[in-house]
Length: 227
Image (tube, rainbow, N blue to C red):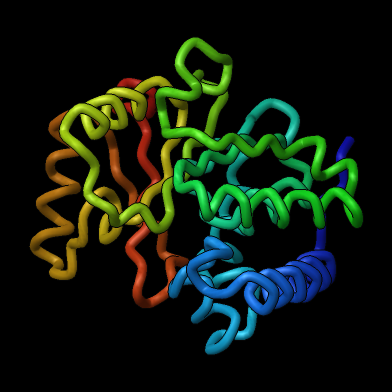
């Protein structure tokens, strides 16, 4: 039985990964490093490696999904802070990132994780390719998978968006931020319209009450899977 990581484990992980991010930023610069302004702000203004939504999602996953029978896919992982935390807490994770700069930086984060938590790094597979194409025909797209999207605001080409939407029904559970999934939805009306679209496609969409104030995470399940 894999033990459940406590808050102290994640606090240590946060400080460890933050130092890695600082070193990457200082040695390679904002754009060359793949951190860009998003992670530059996390280093210089926030001061933490794990975001508020990283922490919230780790807690939510631990509360709702079994480590032995469920696996996690994080699509658009960025530097991989969330899958690093999930792997440390005992989950098997695949994380995908298609930006070349980001995947290089995520590789450095993964290598640092392997030095301190080798068993966790073995549970965490980093994939430098687009979701869901890179996982087509693999066991990662299956009912045992919990599929997570976080900051995915970049507008996808129509063909990729269609593949992404089709992939949602292959997984047993999907967690996404209705504000930042595929496009920006800043108003409640826009987010509710998107929830309506998801429900029309056969999902139940339950708001996650623990979401940070600027996030609007929902837990999606195929409607036929809900008792």
